[in-house]
Amino acid sequence: MARPLPSTLRLSPLGSQIMTPSTELTLAAATGIGYGMPNATALDGAAISSPVRRRFIRVHGRGVHYYRAGEGPPVVLLHSAMSSARAELPLLHQLKSDHTVFAFDIPGMGDSDPLGKRGLRIGDAADALQATLEALQIPRCPIYGSHTGGVIALELARRHPECISALIKIGVHIFSAREAEPILAEEYRPVLTVKDDGSQLLADWTRSRDLMTWFPPYVRRAANRLPWKFPTPGELHDHFLDRARAGNGYRAIYGAVLNVCMDERKAVSALTLPATFMADTHDILFRHLDRMPKLRPNQHVVRYTRDPQGYVAEKARVARSYRVEASSPPDLPFRPTPGRINRRYVDLTGGQILVRSVGEARSGPPVLLLHDGLASSRVFEPLMCALGIHRAVYALDLPDNGASDALAQDRPRIGHYADIVSDVMNALGFERGDILAVGAGGTVALDLLNRPACAGWRGVLEAPNFYEPALARRLEAGWAPSMAPEWDGAHLNRMWLMMRDEYAFWPWFDKSPEAARAVNALDSWEEMHARAIDVLRSLRTYHRLIVSSLQYDWAPALRRAGPRVLRLAIVEGDPRRVHTEAAARVRGLPAVAVLPSPAARRAREILRLLSRWR
Image (cartoon, rainbow, N blue to C red; front, side, top):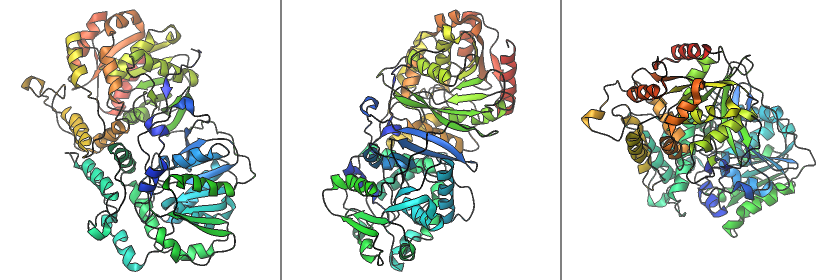
């Protein structure tokens, strides 16, 4: 399958966002513990000399996500709470010209797993950071931390001074008892409760807005009004996503921080390392710099009062002043953890594709899973665990979906998605294997199975988007409407109701009696909430896979594929069964296989179907 990689990807809004300095200033100082948020401006990958790469590493069984960019001595960046490492991308871009920059998602935030222990303390987060630095073989270097990230870095300096050569800390927390009281209240970090009406999404959206308007956000009085420029809907959406992806995970790390950081004078006084404590006039912690204890000669305070546009450059200047003469470690190869679903990014020309895998060491041809539209590869995790007992299993977020980067084409065709999947297969060294593809992913699989390079592959297509032309046009017009963030969060409600109505109607937008479905609603809405977050993560592009699948000329392609398409299948109770059966008759395939819903039984039936030709 070896062939040149196409330049069909661009860096996605999630993978390459960059804030203007003024945006960062407005948002990064919004709480006493702090957070930041990038805007919706994507960079052209071709214009970036040193690409930013997203990476995963598993440390003590916990997945850690980080960005890596640049060449030179190392520097580490830690973001603030209710945020992710994306918030530090502006500083990363400033430093990557002469440093290797590592920007980590702190535990329970972004794409990093939570620490998963009760009674979490800030020392646990510092120990986890030390273990991560050791696993990545990062030598002693300067560490930058913004608000919560700074609290973790300060504790790291106390517990593991061998890891940190200098500290750049944005914001110092020295609250009076009266100031601390509303921050320590439960209202400051509310519990996320998923509801069947999706109102938890709008509640989180409203809280994101309030964080830009008042401090604390639940005390909505004139004295608490923040004088900042209000963010755009796109900026709000991205900040909402950081909060939503963390779920209740942010409460654990935030609670650990709140328990220790109301008064950091003692910790600062004990610090002997070179350090700079910074804040700008937009930061509510700016006045706390006046409450600092006496510092050592190698420690400094920077009160930034000049042009806000220059604040990121000033932070970069300070970080460069602590440059170490040490080499950064090479990019580590992928090392899967047996028995666990592992995540990694496959690097392609112009972007990255997220791949989940399990059972990597198992012999025999792998099983490749391609998800439907309005989803990501995460939906396959229960099935992957069941299949992974017997086979090596790989599932990827298709371009324009989930955490993968977006296609460069404005109106991509199914062949463009198939190109990328082919490149991922090539990068992983696959020459033959089996494909299980669902819905829109089924059209991608069919395009692949018609290629000479995929002669060693066979597939089972579950509820593929194979419809007669009139219905396909109708579905194209209504099934996956394009969306953009709206100031009132209406797009969140629209997305939730789209997914919810799939259980009551097919297609969901047809409310006629003929379209009604007699199915049981979900017992738990947690999975639909997780799926909604997957789709909202790629809100601006999610619809393109579905639209291109409905435009695909599947009938002649199905005939050409011959025996490479083993069977069409449907999960019991799926209303698309009649259309899948009609498609099977086009090529004279056997009767449509009905798959059970439970993952273990579904896996057994899939393996039985696939084994017939091996």
